[in-house]
Length: 319
Image 1 (tube, one colour):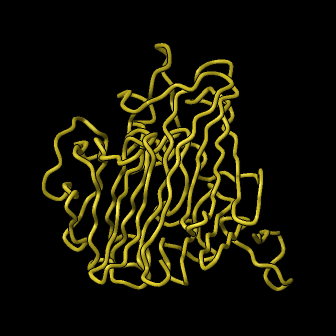
Image 2: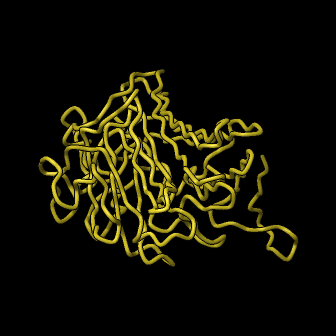
């Protein structure tokens, strides 16, 4: 594994400066993963030179939250407000257009190196007690290239507080299949229920998937314009798989374990440099879980929780 620092000096001194801090490169066989110091983000995963996630430039932070990890909540908290033992908690509003607190407290945090080996890297950041979240917790993220060259990600939350801490964990990867036009790919997600949201993307109810949200038999990406959380996911042997596939038989898959009872699917035309992009986001709970209680968990003092997800691909001779 190799890594690059982001020193104060400029490129003229022989060092590369990255907006997302230190870059950790993990290689195994023809697989490559690049992980960032900022937000413990997945900047790139590729096989045999085939890019399987969206990426971005050295001087950019991740556009559209591409690849970042999310703690101690994923998605949104309505108005940034929730209640702890009847006392109002006010989080900072980070999604101003919808007046929500979005994507947790570590999106702009630097993660420290905990461990590194030939095929893995583990980073960790601390959430200190603060307004809106009066708990001391650590978010630890391990990226591992497995023997089959698939990428495995383990996100753990450790509670160093004296009281149980509420949480939802998640991640925000965008998948792609090399240079294939995303519009021509088929997206398959084995989930039976969608969360119905208001104009601020806050869930208000749920219903069986239908139309664009029914991805169980596969839908062409060009036909989709969705930003939806899905649940009642079909797990097989403890794992659920969500796939982008090409007519030529190649595919890229995001998988998640049963600790992740939700998946958020976002098809957008707003990712810079891409006509369309597909985010498949594993989550332990949906938006506004701090208020609805859906998927919300409380971690006892001194204990930890781990969610596991990953990406693999079928690429002909490379897969």
